[in-house]
Image (cartoon, rainbow, N blue to C red; front, top):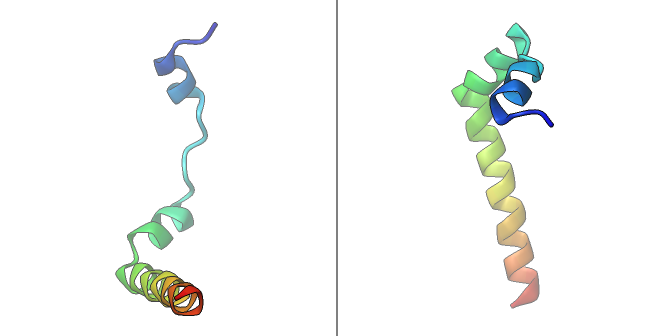
Length: 47
């Protein structure tokens, strides 16, 4: 059976474009607004 450290070492690394997307504050803010808007709509509909 694999140990945790072996499984982590075998995991794929993110590409440079994936890292850029993860670090983008504009993209993170847009996702935050989108998710918040969706949750707000769901809350308004159920109450």
